[in-house]
Length: 215
Ligand code: AMP
Image (cartoon, rainbow, N blue to C red; front, top):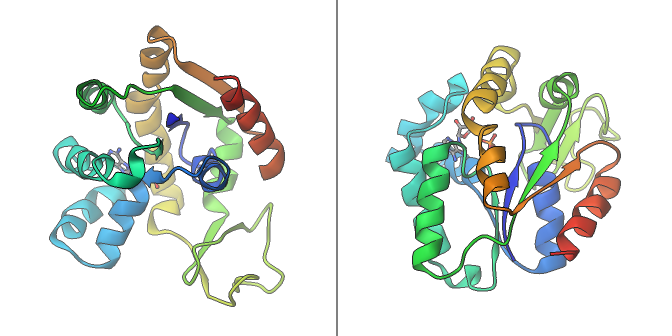
């Protein structure tokens, strides 16, 4: 299965992707995760990307498209993949269509995870991540047993720089302007499916699987 996950920041794409990896045994390609790692490792790419990410802006297409092309060419993508956070605008979507057409492996499905704007704000401002194992928590919905400490590995929980309120507002605006039009792009191609991203993680996952298993 070759899957694109669509949805606003905070819709839970990454969380669902992690569960899909286990079920379908295909890798998740998260451009956000790749870029954050480059920032942490202070690579030249990370240094370039950081200023855009801190403002909630999109990193230039020239940078992101190269990363995705390189990743899709790896052996573990032969049986399929889950793209999470890419494409983010029409130009990225068209480039992806072109690359996959050349490889004779078009997308199977684009799945949109839909969540209300008020809910998104709470999910993003409340989101905390473990420095050790990347497990996610939320100070409103899924708190750790000990404040600021990961239940799984005892690591320190931190708030992503771009999960601060001003940046979040911009990320949601950028989503509306640049990424939401992709819903139409995939509808026209006849591969769009959507689920409401409300309820527990497992409830949403069941809805996601019900849609994907029909494909
Ligand atoms: P995410 O974790 O997917 O919300 O991504 C975090 C940040 O990384 C975004 O706000 C952008 O600055 C950058 N980013 C991630 N994916 C892309 C993409 N496909 N195109 C441009 N910028 C991206």
